[in-house]
Length: 308
Image 1 (cartoon, rainbow, N blue to C red):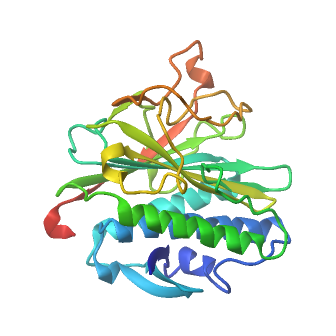
Image 2: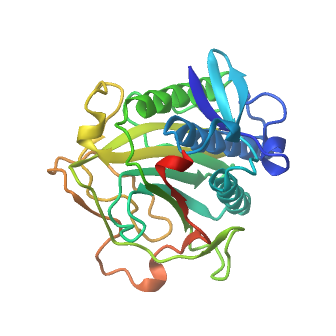
C-alpha cells in the first residue's frame, strides 16, 4: 500500500525527525509538529496517488503497513518544488495561529479556474490549549484526543481513508492546473500578512462541476491543542465505486463558508439536490471587512500529460 508523505532538506524534513506520528501529545509544540506532518502527508498522498509529479519527486518512509511516498526537493520537477513552498507557507500561517482553511483545487483549463475537477479542503481550529487539524468527518471518523495511542491511530485511519478515496477516484484530465487558497481568522490575522509563496487573493463565489458534486467527509484528528479536518469535493460519477458507509456523501451547498470570526458552526448534512454550481461564500449581509482574508499562490502549477 502506498501513501504520500512529505520530506524536504530544510523545514519539512526537520518536521519528520523522530516518529512520524506520536502516540501521545504533551505540549503545544509537539501538537503543532504533528499537525504539520499530517497536513504535509495528506498533500503528498494526494499528489502521488493522483499522479501529479514524477516518482523522483518522492522518497520512501514506512508507517506500520503503509508505504509512505514522501515529497522531496526535485530540481527536475518545478511543480513539486512549488507545492513544497506552498506547504511551507501554510506552516508559517499555522505557527502564527492565523490559518483557518487551506483549499487545494484541481481544474483542467487555466482560463476557467471556476470549472473544477477536485477540491481538497483542510480546516484548522485552535483550541484554548492549542491547534486542531480538522478533517471534515463522517460518523465513522475518529476524534483522537490526547489519550495514549489515539492520535497515532486516528492519523493512520485518516490516511487509510484518504488512500482508499484516491484509489477510487476517476482519472484526471490530461491537462490539469493546481492552486491553493488560504483563508484566515480575521480577528488575529494582520491585513498585511502574506505567508511565503503567497499573495493577496480574491474570494471566489462559485465553482462549477461538469456533473453533480458530492461532499466526501474524510476525517478529523484532534491533538488536544490543534484540530485538522479534511473534506473532498468532486463529481459523484467519479467516485461511484466507494462504499457509502466509509464516506458520507452529501449534496453540497457551500464549500468555504465566509462566516464571521468566532462562528464555528460546522457544515451539516444537506438534503438538497446536488448542484453543479457551488457557492463558495455567503451571499449576504456580511460586509467586506467581515469576510475572511484570502491568499493565493504567486504561481499556479500547470501540468500536462507529458509532465506527469
